[in-house]
Length: 109
Image (cartoon, rainbow, N blue to C red; front, top):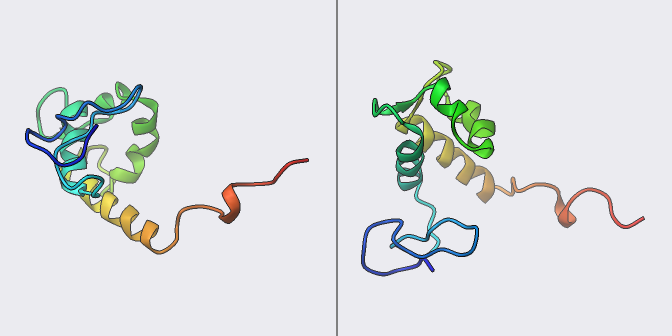
């Protein structure tokens, strides 16, 4: 599933309930490829950006993240904005921005 191999991106089989893997580096973080996949699934009218109406038709996870991707606040998400948001997220992950230590809040009671 996924990992290096011939074929176009997204050609891997993926796992149960998961997304298909793609040809490539086997787990690399590629903001451009992610932006392209988001646009492919969300830009239903083919104008090169995702409108608020198109966002409303996407899955819950994307609807929650949409305000983060719309970096200029114009109500549309463009490829460059998604790439910018992905790069910012990558920097935050690299700087230890992954959430609270110890696996979450609270513990057994």
